[in-house]
Each structure stands twice: as C-alpha cells, then as structure tokens.
Image (cartoon, rainbow, N blue to C red; front, side, top):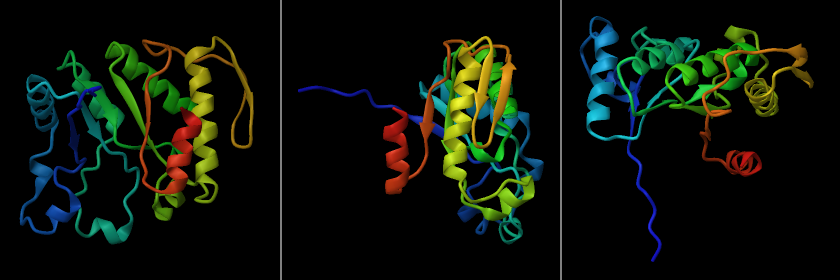
Length: 207
C-alpha cells in the first residue's frame, strides 16, 4: 500500500486572534503583537518540526469588519522576511496573498527577494480576494479578478525566470523588463486557496 507524507503547518492570524475569537476576548492585542510575538511562534514551530508558517494578506479592512478587529494587519511579506532571519528550515508562506490587488512587477520583486534571502523557503499562497471594498481601496476593479490573477502570475513567473521579459496582455505590458534577484530555485511553489468548482479548475489549469 502506498503512503503519503503528512504535512503540518502553522497559520498565524495577522492580528493575533481569529476574528471569531476576537469577539469573545476582552483584550487589546495591539500591546502584544510585535516582532517577539511572531519570532517566538516561528522558533517554536521550527523546533516542533512543523513544515511551514502561513500569514494572511489584507491590504485594507472594510468598515464593518474593523469594528471587531484590532488594527494590526501587518504585511505578510515583511513579517515573513523577518522570520527568515530567525529560522533555517521551516517554509515561509502567504496564506493567502490577494494577488490581483498588487502590482505584479513589485510583487514579483518582493517575492523573489524573500525567496532568495531565505534560500528557497518561500511558498506563494494565492487567492483572488472576496472583499469589493478592498479592491476599491487600491483602485483595482473587482470584476475579472480571476483573469487578472492568472495574467499576473504568468508575468511574475516570467520575471523570475527570464533575463528580459516582454509581455503584452490585457492588464500588463512590459518591454524588455529586468527583475532581480531571481528566486533561489527558478520560481517558488504556488498554492491556490479556494473551495469552489471554479477555484479547483484554476488549480488544474496551473498544474
């Protein structure tokens, strides 16, 4: 009988508590969340032989959610870069990065830098996003975000693996762009988040 390896991962909610728990906790985590909070979890997870650490991505919080969430939504790439310096084995991942809300050239650079400095330990967890308010805050149309995500990922893969990238698409146009550094092993693994039939079809197309 064939066997499959079981992976254990730690998900660190960006504000210290899951929002469901936050409604029940009469506390203020703004005095708790800091570098030691994240580095302690990362070191414990690595000592415990966990496979990876995932951090979420929220650029802007909708007003109706801000009423019960503390205002400590840190940027996951920045925090994971710091955790790369205090760990040596554990994988570092976004869970997830809302790709269509980002500039793909800038995101490709940020991802490549983190992957290079962590010696190939980064995993890009990808999602389309669900909050129309967040998209409005960054000036990106909510419609066609799935197509935008696929195109952005194609651009990023090419920036990671090509010396000169020329691309003409619906959302991105590049003419001989150079992007450095390159990721440690050509391109980091990409994980898709989602549970709908459309999300599963996107995963199959990207495999």
